[in-house]
Structures are given as C-alpha cells and as structure tokens.
Image: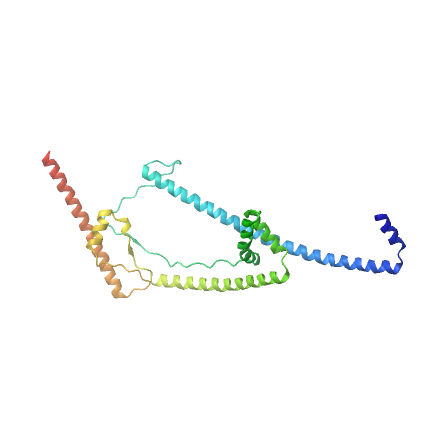
Length: 273
C-alpha cells in the first residue's frame, strides 16, 4: 500500500502537490499553536497542582502535630494520676512557695477570627465536581483515590469558557479576602487600643479553689456577681473593688474556721486515747 501511494504521489501534477503542501503547512501552523496553548495550560496546571499538594501536606503535618500533642497531654495526665515519672528526665523547676488565702484573677485580650485565604480557580472547580466524581467512583469500578487525578484531568482539558468562569470567581474571592483582611486589621487595632485604655476587669477563677472551699465560697457569696466589661465607670470600679475585698475576707475566714475544726478533731482523738 505504501509503494502504491508513493507511485501515485510521484505521478501527481505540480498544482495538486502544491495544494496538499499548502494544507500540510496550515496543519503544521495549527499544531504549533495548539501545542503552545497545551504547554501553557500544563504549566499553569502544574503550578496549581504543586500549590494544592503543598497545602495538603501542610494540613496533614498540622493534623499529625495536633494528634501528637494530644497524645502527649493524655500520657502526662495518666502519668500524673498513676504517679509515674516521665520517660525523659526533665530539669526540675525551683519550687515556689504556695500562696494561701489568695484569689486568682485572669484577663483576656480581645480575640477575633482571621478571614480564611481565598481558593484558587482549580480548587473552586474541584469543590463543585468532587461530589459527583466520588459518587461515580463508588458506583463504578474506580476507587476513591482516582478522584483527584480525574479532577486534575478534567480541569486540564476544560474549555476556555469553563476556566474563565472559575477564574472570575477566584478573582472575586481574592478581592473579598483583601477587603475582609483590611477590616480585620482595622478592627483588631481598634479593639487593642480600646483594651489598652480600658482593660477588662479581673475575673475570679473558682477552679483554683479547693472543692469544699469553692462550694462554701459560692454559698456564702450568692449575691456576688463578677461581670467582665471592656469599660467600667468609676462607681462600678469601686463596687467591684469592694466585692473583691469581701471575697478575700470570706476566704480568710473559711481557712481560719477550717483550721479550728482540724484542731478540735485532734484534741478529741487525744482525749479518747
């Protein structure tokens, strides 16, 4: 067949040959343009894919770190309950004298939620098509681990209209993120300035009191309400200071009464013997 076609091509006149040569030249030019667009799309896809994989790797590392910290905390708690020394020797910190009959206080700075960074066009595309692809993978013979590869191929071979749609969404998300981050920074500065001028009042930390003392303290001070406010008037500050002093006096009385009860119990035991 090849020889026959070769003989036919040699016997064709020059005008026919030029006609097919012009077609071949146009096909070469179209191929060059398509290949250039293809490699541009591949480079953009590879960049987005690398960014996506890096973010996935960072999220995985964060999960591993959080899990490791939780495991260490759980292990330390169990060791404290069992009075077991830790595996690694740690330098002992100098013991500080325990403060008795004291009320502990705590104050918090204003806490704001920072806006999340915007998603890229590929991530928005993947979010819209992931559910349908996973459903097809479960129903068909493909496994779930093929879904990311299929999403990448779908994005790589998507038409220009579809890509333009998600690129516009990504651009709008970037603009909104820029506005949100500016508002977040302004609000943070505003609250920090307000906090420096009028810091929050102290809050009694009941968790640092003993069980019986805590219950007795709460029963003895039912009308005692500590309100955390960003701003307090002079009268409110005076009332708060007065309540704090009363609370400290009540704690001292409770400790003294408890010591007297212990002494009486010791006397009774000695007399019985």
